[in-house]
Length: 113
Image (cartoon, rainbow, N blue to C red):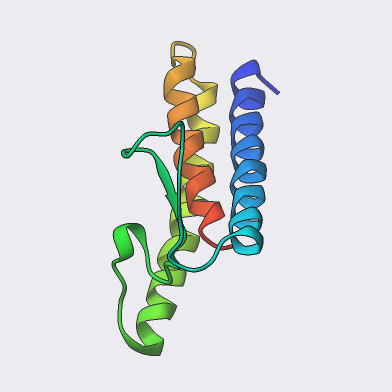
């Protein structure tokens, strides 16, 4: 496996571990709607909400909406995996691009849990 392939896997695994740990911590230590400021700043905070839809709270209504959204997520994860595999095989691709797509993939996978 190439160094860029290892980098992609490491980024995805690291982000998923942090994501899941933070979700568990928030659910076990915060009340719904509670906020915690980070670094004593108003612009950086953890705000406990539940998002059953997709990015920015968008959702599709009804049972078929959830099915469509789930199918879209599965397609997105598969597409990103295939794309990253092809990307890391290219000779002149920057590590920043590999990390960027790996972060997107980790976010798509993390939304399932």
